[in-house]
Length: 116
Length: 112
Image (cartoon, rainbow over all chains, first blue to last red; front, top):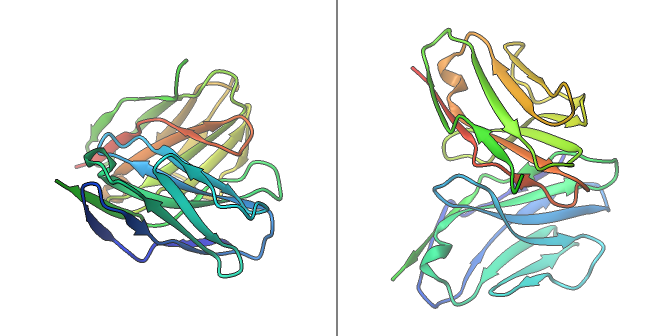
């Protein structure tokens, strides 16, 4: 079974600064995707960024980038130029691609506060 | 529709009552997932549909939980004889390819 671990329950960052959220995972599979989701108080999960395991290049979406270390099973999220609207819960998630549609496996989340 | 829609957004139930939670997925999405998110935790998988077929219900915590998707679009999660431990946010997600899931805003269930 796959597991996802987020070891930072809470983080804070000053506006315009950079912050990195950590995530490690455990799997014996070779074909999978990793995601970071943002959940604001409205509760809707919003996809921030996705990484395919077979791609060596780290994914980037505007101010958001990942550091994907496949051998170490590490998948951290870097948020540059933090904005007040980035305040939310952030969840790291794993999905297997080996057998059709499978459910996401989530970590427990990191609560990020961006301080003005 | 434009996104995944869930109703109601909030539900308060007395212990022992039955509740029904509705999910309207994105039109044409084959896959539909239900997750349960306890306070301060990440979502946990409950059940999965491909069209009208329930392919995986391994996450349902007890036989009081039942889900259906009779016509392959709208899905209903039913909880019978609710207990306090059922209090949580229930999230629905739909997907076409499995590479990206789109979530609704969830239903917050409070059992008193």
